[in-house]
Image (cartoon, rainbow, N blue to C red; front, side, top):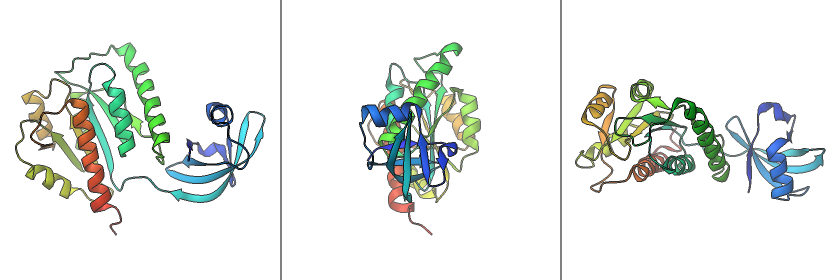
Length: 250
């Protein structure tokens, strides 16, 4: 079933008025007809809707079931990603959104191969946000995760300090005990930060600064992972822990 996002202004009673790009997608790309059903996500809630009519360049969709499904995780995961090269960031954003992150923070770090010029940062963020929205629709998210503006390492650590749990997967960390301990600290409705280094990894002083900011260094196993693999693995690990051990807690 297809999923679309709507602002509160689009809702009128028990109906949504959908226009613009979504109207074109519903009518001309998907070729949906009166009576067809789809999901509309508004302010974190997904409602089941049925097309009532097409009027002008607007789809009139009646809500047939409120709060049809909830795909949110019981925790809020924020991925702090050291800027990778080429199009790896797009892959990371897509998969992280599918896995349930609340937000993605691109971070400039010392060993980043990519150095974005200030004038390009805005267009990059807009592109990344569009990818996040597309992935949210595909995975039937209740809301679109935010892709934040590119941050310096210092800015990222300041943000991480405000979170309940802050984990730093590090290739020099031995054993999985620290990983298990960090996961077991996560409680329902906690905010969880995950900091992933770029292709070149972390410099030692960056790890020290993360530890000073409350970061818990953890291991993702004995193998050395590419930055995109580490990001997907770490987010997936937290997602599974939340779904299996936290979801449904009173």
